[in-house]
Length: 329
View 1: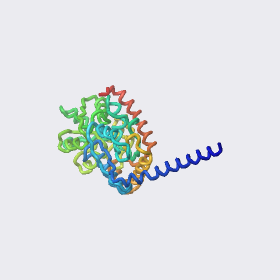
View 2: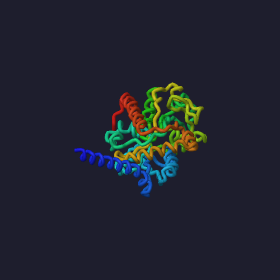
View 3: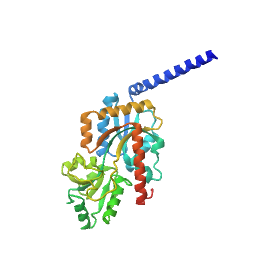
View 4: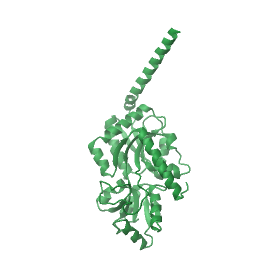
């Protein structure tokens, strides 16, 4: 009996040691495989999410010692990219960088999204929160929300507001603004913020709602004007712009987030290595400054923190969607 126990103990220790060695070597084999890491982005090139992904990918390639590429799969508010992630091998070479809409909102407003973020994905790292904003084109004379409302009421066909995706935070904000001011506002959905911005810059649509980072560059260049931001405080990158709450519209103070996800089943060693890489990149002062300059509030979230953020935000939006009367489509 004693010998048997010793043999079992020896076998157990060897198995444990082998597993630990395998886990330790996994990131090394991952880096030496020669296969690039692909970061899926659910929006077209030229938008805020794409710019963020390309900045992180550029720095992560040095941090991880691997080629990191951005793979744009635009459409349906990130739904197509999310479906691609679900279908991808869980080998550590495919990730998905996205914001709250695809993870926390889209599954609640689409009957068959083709993915379940809780069942199909695993959080890797969160890296920022941000706010959405209302902006107007250069041909729209409004300088603040009150002037915009007055301008819309003075003429027909002025109430169209561009949004980057249907059934998104911006669409619900359009609905809230219309109800608050008792006027007819119409959400005009686009396939991402880039084509929406193109129409705004061409004065084809008078206003748009998207993330602050989508508008930042053109706002600073005077090509369009941000007239209100969501959230609880003004943004450091554009302190002259008041919040919507300051201008009398409340209910959208919760901060959306950005995160990176992997397919469910991805080895933990890969997740840990990539998450640590994101944390290291965010500590680089120029990366921090560039992300902050895009209107992000930078802050690393480990996988458990990102999962908790996702769950909390989903619950907030479940209440908003329910009160709006929106029916999943």
